[in-house]
Amino acid sequence: MKLTVNGEPHEHQGGETPDALLEELGAKKEHTALLLNGSVVPSKEWKTTTLNENDEVEMLVFVGGG
Amino acid sequence: MTKDILKIGGEEFSSRLFLGTGKFSDTKTMIEAVKASGTELVTVALRRFNREQAEDDLYGPLSELSTVRVMPNTSGAMNAKEAIRAALLGRELSKSPIVKLEIHPNPHHLLPDPIETYEAAIELVKQDFIVLPYIPADPVLAKRLEDIGCAAVMPLGSAIGTGKGLSTADMIKIIVRDANIPVVVDAGLRAPSEAARALEMGCDAVLVNSAIAAAGQPAAIAAAFKIGTEAGRAAYNAGLMPTSEVAVATSPLTSFLK
Image 1 (cartoon, rainbow over the protein chains, first blue to last red):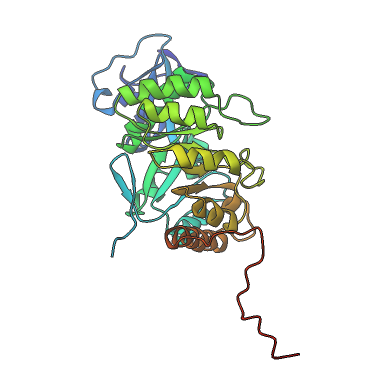
Image 2 (image 1 turned 180 degrees about the vertical axis):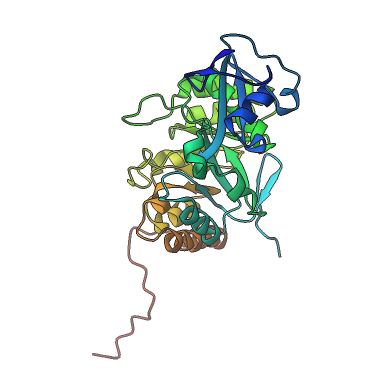
């Protein structure tokens, strides 16, 4: 499935859920927050939300900032 | 004896020094500075997950500091809509409603946009955030943000990273005089004496980042900022002496030496 992940095209091989996507990309689930097409998806919905072709996903983590 | 606790939106702090976690040379240095500062609140930013830069992820290292709360900021947001989105993302990770609302679209001066900040604050308060907005040192704006339910206001001392100190001191004094919520000076401080001066003026806390991260020895200066902040608060509580236009002798001016 073709997705845009963090601004880059990504060919997603795994299951059609954010949970599977995070697994595939090696992201630590507890450390990551998710936007799907501009909306926040809480972690409890990661296994039940369906990803669709051309969806835009943003995966965010905490980094240093003032 | 009262412990002079700082209360912001129901959260209690015994340290009046907050730290930003940006600009440090590495995470280890940042954590050492955080510990040396005695802070109980640090800010973090959100950035895209990058597998190649996993060491930048602060979630793990900060989770180990049990006395330190994490306050996500909304840096990167160009407008209210983006800031609200950032706040929601931050809350997902921090599991806490406290947020530093910052919207500074112009990278040259990084001054906060008062209009977008006000609009974002209204919405974030509605969504039960504890909102700490980063603002220009504008007493009218500060009062407006208090009126719509912000938990504190964070007026800048000088532009971020400039180290120009309390260039807005006169405006901050007005904000302090009129505020019924805590006032946290955020941005531009360079020296612990400036943190002391802010607290002496009646500010409730300071937020320091560049002054520590970009110093020669971050942990050492963080410890100095801790002392400076405590000194300033102690002085404020003790009450500074009155000023006088004319000299007032401290020793008796007897004439026995003639």
